[in-house]
Amino acid sequence: MEQLLDPILLSRIQFAFVVSFHAIFPVFSIGIASFVALLEALYYKTGDEAYARLSAFWTKVFAIAFGMGVVSGIVMSFQFGTNWSNFAYATANFLGPVLSYEVVTAFFLEAAFLGVLLFGRDKVPAGVHLFAACMVALGTFISSFWILAANSWMHTPAGVEFVNGMFHVTDWTAAIFNPSFPYRFAHMGLASFLTGAFVVAGVSAWMLLRNRDTVAHRKALSMCMWLILFLAPAQIVMGDFHGLNTLEYQPAKVAAMEGNWETRSNVPLLLFAIPDQENQTNHFELGIPSLASIILKHSPDGVVPGLDATPREEQPNVFAVFWSFRVMVGIGVLMLLAGIIGLIYRLKGSLYQPGMFHRFLVLMIPTPFIAVLAGWFVTEIGRSPWLVYGMMKYSEAITPSLTTGLAVASLIGFTLVYAVVYASGFLYILKTIRKGTDQS
Image 1 (spheres, one colour):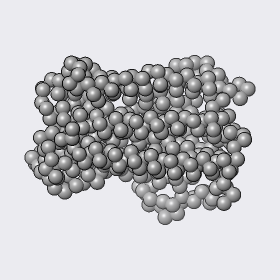
Image 2: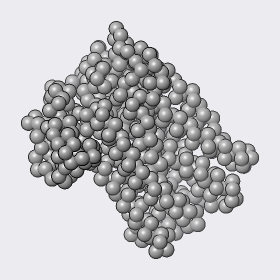
Image 3: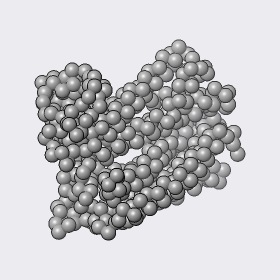
C-alpha cells in the first residue's frame, strides 16, 4: 500500500493513463488522413461519386479523432510541469524546441487545411480540395516525426551532454535522428496505416452486412484488404529490425520481453510463462527451443543478454513487458492471417459476399488499438527506471514538492474528466459511423 501511494508511481500511472488515451487518436488519424487523401485523388482522377461519399464520411470521422487527439495532447504536455518539473527543466534545451517545431510545422498545417477539407467541397476547385487533403495527411506525418524524435531521444539519447542538471545539445542532427528513431518512426507509421486499414475494413464489412451503399464500401474494403495483405508482413519485419536495435541499446528491455533471466546461448522463444521477478525466474514455461537466439543473434548458439546483467533496482517490470509484448505480437499474427484469408476470399470471388469473414473484420476493429497500446507499454515500461535512458531516472525527474495527496487528487481528476470527455467523443464517432455515407 505504501508503494502504491508513492508520488512517483502515481505520476507514472497518471501519465500512462493520459498517454494511452492520447496515443490511440493520433495513430488512427494518421492512417485515416492518408486514406482520405487517396480517396480524394481517386475522385479527382475518375469523377466517381463513390469516392467522394467515402471521403466525406471518413473526413468527419477523422475530424473528431483529430480534435480528441489535440485535447489529450495538450493535457499531456501540462503534466511535464506539474508532475515532472525536474525533467522539464533538465530537457528544456532539447524538448522545448522540438515540441515547438511540431506545433509550428504540423499542427498549423493540419488545422488550416482541415477546414478546407471539411467545408470546401463545393466552394474551392477540386484540385485545391485534393491539395488540402494531402496537406492534412502530410501534417499528421510531420507531427509524428517530431513527437517520435523526442520520445526516441528519451530511449536512446544522443547529441547532448548533461551538465549541472541540464541537457545541452551538442549536435542537433544526432539528437533528432537518434539511434532508435528511424526504426520507431517506421514501426509507428506502419502501425498507423494498419490501424486505419482495419477500422475502414471493419466498418465497410459492417455496412456490407447491412447492405448499405455497397458500391462505395466494396471499394473501401478492397483497398484496405490489399493494404493489410502487404503491410501486415512488412510490420512484422520492421518489428524484428526494431527489436534488434533495442537489443543493442536497451538489452534489459529485450531480456524482459523474452523473459530471459540468464545471459546464455540457445535461448528459447517463450510462448507462455509466468515471470517471477522476486525469484528471478519463470514458472510454467512453454517455448520453442533456441528460437529467441536465432531471431536475435541469427544463430542457435547466439548469446542473448539476460536480466542477470542488470541490477535488480534497474530492471523493468518483467511481467508487464513480457505479456504486453506477446499481446502485440499475437495481434500482429492475427492481422497477417486476416490479410491471407482476405486474399483467399478475393481469389474465390467472394470477398464482397456478406458472411463470417465480414463479421470477423468487424470484430478486428479494436485489435490495432490494443496492439498499439501493448507496444507502448513494452516501450515505456521496458525503459524503467530511466526517464532518459541511462542518464535520468524517474526519481530524479519528479517534481520535488509533489505530495501523495496532490498526486492522488490529480489522478482522480484526470480519470473522471477523461471518462466523460472521451466516452462522449467515442459515442459521437460511433453515431457518425452509424449514419454512414448517406449522411448530410
